[in-house]
Length: 122
Image (tube, rainbow, N blue to C red; front, side):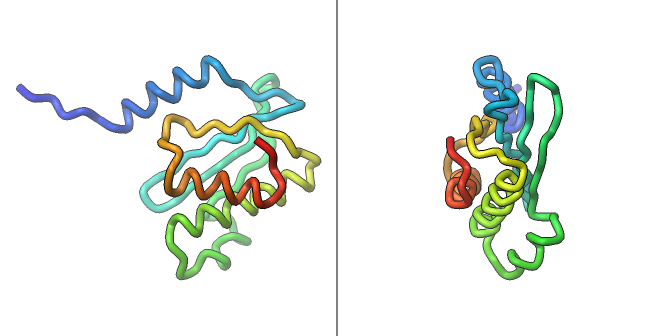
């Protein structure tokens, strides 16, 4: 019997492998990305205190109006900029980027570029 490889399970294994090596601290928190079929979510996490400092997604009220009629990749860029703007208000400038096992292309790359454009450094 042929078993089909579940891509999401493979991604989770990659994410766990990377998470063994990187973690966010209070000086340099972790920017984590999750993407579903239609939405993209990102959050800045302080792993030393196990707290989420802030988050942004395509479902945020201020982002929804900006992404109307845009592609998913363009929406991810706008979400990255919105997250960077929130981070600047909290005084966060340096982060560790955690792509959570996703390939650094498409929406993940666009979100990272938007965050960098907004002022985050990683």
